[in-house]
Image (cartoon, rainbow, N blue to C red):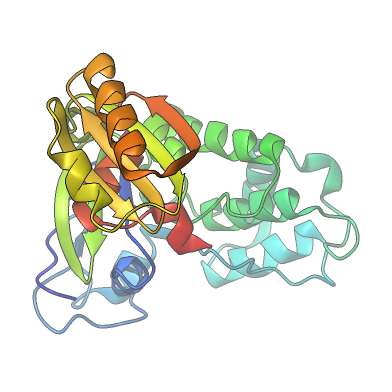
Length: 297
């Protein structure tokens, strides 16, 4: 980590994006008290996490990327166990279990064992429910939709929106799905090599990429092809990954003309072409030189 400084405002959904090894998990681990920072301070709700660790833990809910459930237990038994860790018991715990099961639409499966009865998406939703039992002010979500079907992903995204809208929950959210960050997050921080290299609203970050974006795939491109593309009129920027190129041009017409001219001149074969408006994925590639989803794979 290298002098990471972040401020997450009350009630916002804050995205933390970065390739593997960027420092996202370390940052979350320090917030929940699993790791200690080498320097500086971590405050949650105005409380120093190092000075008042028990108090801060009561304010924070953590939903890890790994499924943290006991497969031989039922959904209810799992939530009873995790609720006990938060100090909940008796009628209060029973009421909270009913509330969170209803929130994630798993009430009908309360007494069913996890093993053999729950799909991957259902496990993810129960994982989320466990992190909500004590009504945290700050919820840390580490890749909450990884490996789930589209229906479960939509359900989890709706849950996250509801937490902000109905309860004012502050959410720190990591994901490898850029489209999720675009539709969910109020602000986004992009990390690389232990540093925060950009932090702003999604609209401002996306607005930093000018022009039309072309993603092209070529067979046997000539050495220096990216440099040749960059030299054409209307081309703002070119990034290269193997035989894949991302070209940003001032207009679609100028970009396509430059592209066609360079391909013909260099004898390369066009295998794929996609045209799009700038988005958060292109911002990430521009800043880090990496494709986040390729890195996740």
